[in-house]
Image (cartoon, rainbow, N blue to C red):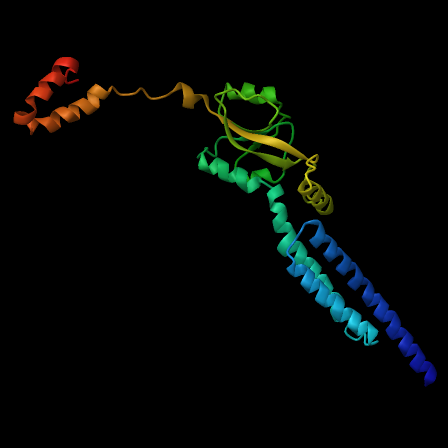
Length: 255
């Protein structure tokens, strides 16, 4: 019986240490994320409470709650990721701002978008239009295309823009491919939060439609519109305004 009791205590001790490992990893990871990205201080209180309970349980040699504590620490880590961290990373994913800029300027969905020398996987979902990728479009290709048809393009900011091109939006876009490479993207966002934007490229969203500039409707002569309205209005007041009326007719005519 003594042997069985010793074996049972040994098994419990091993289980306690095995459950303690995920508790330790989740705690360190949670604290690291909260500190690195300067997240809400509430997370420190939650983590501190779990750590305190865990230490109290282990000092009392009562490890029956170790599985529950391990699960709780893991849930807290996931909550930090999805509730606090990922929303804070949205500032490094400017696609909704690009979508808003296009919508505000009411650019037809028939106008495709060009992205200079690359393709960004998240863009088509947000801009809701075709992305031209039959070739790698250079800055010269964008300008050349603008001579033939309307152009909506994301181009690098170092290019001097022709005066007729509108800049709808300007900002940084992740340059290392897809953000689905989660840990690498988080790491580069952390570097950007410290002022290191080497993994991001500054872009201008530009638009040009030659028809908007070369096919303006002719302006109507103010004499042919406003003066006729004045003449009709003054007819009712002719006895009092005949001097003014004849003066206008003599100088400019009725139109």
